[in-house]
Each structure stands twice: as structure tokens, then as C-alpha cells.
Amino acid sequence: DAGVIQSPRHEVTEMGQEVTLRCKPISGHDYLFWYRQTMMRGLELLIYFNNNVPIDDSGMPEDRFSAKMPNASFSTLKIQPSEPRDSAVYFCASRQTGMNTEAFFGQGTRLTVV
Amino acid sequence: AQSVSQHNHHVILSEAASLELGCNYSYGGTVNLFWYVQYPGQHLQLLLKYFSGDPLVKGIKGFEAEFIKSKFSFNLRKPSVQWSDTAEYFCAVNAFYGQNFVFGPGTRLSVLP
Image 1: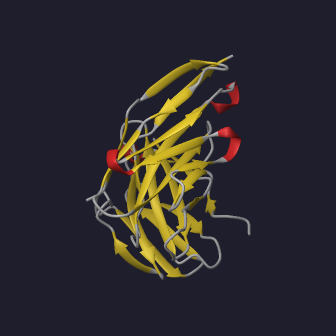
Image 2 (image 1 turned 90 degrees about the vertical axis):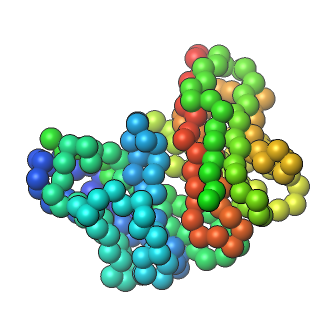
């Protein structure tokens, strides 16, 4: 398996624009997590899904953020409108159901909002 | 709610020095414990994990960690660090039968050649 795949790797956008980040989890994994990493706040969980259903979105900072998982192999994180303070690295991770399983991370998307 | 604390924000060592990074968690039940490493500009990778059994677990690249249940700790160790160990290290907890991973704030390790 190619691992968790995220796209794009880098995104530079102007304030006010819509940004969509994409993630393909590892095949067979039924949990998908979206994290945001900044110097100030470290690694924050934004939302996670189980079997394509959002389970906990309490980490989503504002209504400007939304996430979907239309099927088991694809998820998006959308920011509309984007703001400079959204600049961060966004990681997607996936995990298989089970008592003893770890999360596998994608390479991340570095978002810069100017 | 679970939480994870890491003792040091930034550790600076010379090559060949010994390393110990502290991690404590707060959760009363059974947990799974992890250390992840993030090399500069890269994603998080699993270094080692504890699920059950021997509380001393060995991971990749000569790292090991010891789970001390009574202290709610899972400290990471390496007897002799290398320059290539320069990275950020994250401790994480997953409650047994739980779904989410809770990460600590991370410890940045700088190894001087």
C-alpha cells in the first residue's frame, strides 16, 4: 500500500479564497483523522471519521472549516473563506479498527494563506 | 478526558549522549501508548508502541520506552544519540477500545555533531 496520500503537498492562497485539502486513507482503514500542526498550538485534532461518518468535530475551529468523507477512500477538508491564521501543516491519518492498532500519517499539506 | 504532557519542549544534546524524553498521561483506564517521530519537513512516523505485556518496548533505530503504570509514564530512551536523530518526538495515548489518539505537545531534539 502507498500509505496515506494527501494532496496538494503545498498550497499558497490569498485570504478569502476557498481551499480544499484531500486525503486518501490506507485501504481497509475505517478511521480517518484530520490534524493541524502549528508552532503555537502543536498538533491539534480537528475531526475524525469512522466508516465515513464524522464522530467528533469538536476540534474544528470555526464554521469556515468543513470536512467530508463521501466514501471509504476519500476525504476533504475545506476552508472557506481562508484567513492568514489558517496557515499550518494539515495532516491526515488513518487507522484500522482494532484494539492494538496505530495511526498512519500522510505527508501533510503545508497551507500558506497570504 | 485524556491528556498527555511531555516534560521538555526542546532538548539539545551532543552526539553519543544518552537521551531520555519524559511523557506522562492522564487516564485511569487501560491505554495503548505510542511514540512518533517527525523529522524536519516530514510527516509523523511511528517509533514504537506499547499495547500489553513487557513494559519495556523496543522500537526502531535503537529507541526504547518503558511503561510505568503506577506513574502514568512512558518515557523514551536511547543510549547514544546520533545527529540523524534530530527531530520532534511526540508521545500519544489511545484509550483501550478508544478511537482517538491524544498527542502530547512534542519535544524537539537537536543533536549537535
